[in-house]
Length: 412
Image (cartoon, rainbow, N blue to C red; front, side, top):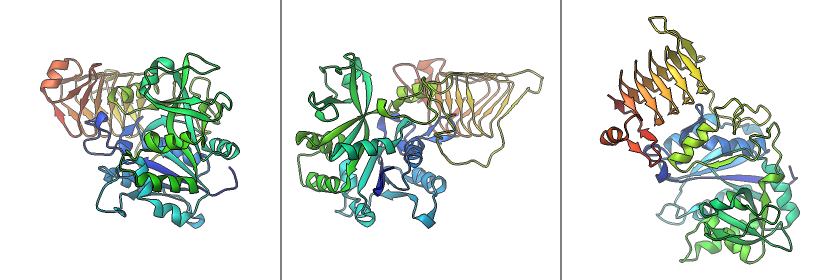
């Protein structure tokens, strides 16, 4: 880590409309993921593993469970002034909420003025990935740029889904253009079928970040967005560098999960990211002990797999089962079960994501579904078997056929 004072900001104020109904009662960064985790744990783990020790989480919408998770889980050593702290919208500039990610930083400048950092790392709170930010910080300092944007290579066919970075032909570390979801784009010089997509992670010199958000706050035409307004302004004056994730070497990474990054902003991407976890050689490996993903340590017993009352065996294949769960004569396949899940005799759970304290009764069938916390599926009931029946019961069914059952619902 460079001998400069580094400060971390996690932008966690997203409403998460595209993840409804999972965000009906919580902020998007607080959505459970991978059994034991919350989405924000990935960003915070990367920052902590990278050596950052002063981090604030800027929150806004439905932030109670997120604030509670941060305060209960991310308690650092106060003796050395280390902390992870939630900072809600404080309305320091008037009676209004954050108008965008840049405005969130503008309204929270007191945090920077108090700590007086040299470098500020700004990251999103709802992506699944591993990254050593200390390497990006070193590259940023070496570049001499005001901001460095983390970028990941994506197929050129997906360019219209991302903010795309075009590099300067004379200096391939500098950004020539920052294009928001372009329809036509030129591929990379060393890989014509790929583009560099912004990961939504930035390293700023603190003084230029403060100056940028102050000037942006005075513009009535701005959307006050980091990616849409702040970064393009740096690009326009030749003061923005790019950091290709391919340069980042995370300890313990495998050839299969190196450079993995997924935006889980939709039900489909959220579902697919879980499927990336469960194979024998996973596309994203939760079991990397050299770069752990931290979360709340549950005071729970181990998961238990038992015969049912008639002595029938259950089976669990290519799945993750969290602490406190009891599986009794049920069949589980290609699924992720959260803490304290109860799956009873003869139940079938396939290609599904089950959150905390879900109970699935005898002979129930759950296929290609997401069940939020404390859902009860009664004996013999089905979810994900008949899309029309699911819609008629008020469940969300995506175009690709994923059924989502909201928190606390009983399915008969």
